[in-house]
Image 1: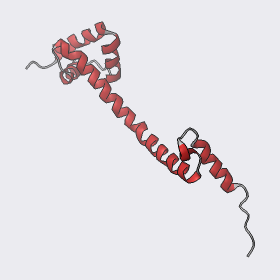
Image 2 (image 1 turned 90 degrees about the vertical axis):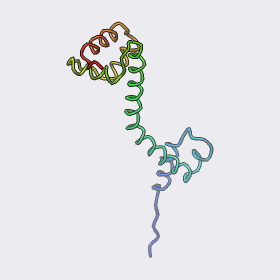
Image 3 (image 1 turned 30 degrees about the horizontal axis):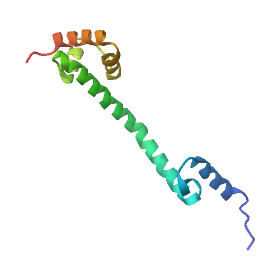
Image 4 (image 1 turned 135 degrees about the horizontal axis):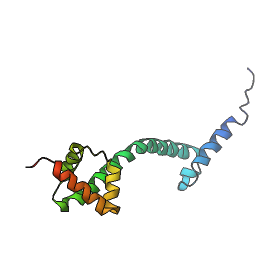
Length: 120
């Protein structure tokens, strides 16, 4: 049987993985097997967390809106309900930004939502 020479394929693959693993601690950046496992785990986490980031930010915006509207005597769910009934379409990201940086505009939105929210 003829001898098979692999050439540079294996070395190039190892170098590529070790290049991706630069900056990892200890053997995770030096040894191919450890680096390969760490890279695969890092990519898996990154893939998952790119989707998770959207959920986390939405929860943050809702918390900020709720905290900003409670001193006005209205809770988050009634605020959103009142805005929907008033036909005001503002996303939560913008509402949270207004609550933090432009209190006057947010207060006007709260007043409009209070007018249209159901009375209990």
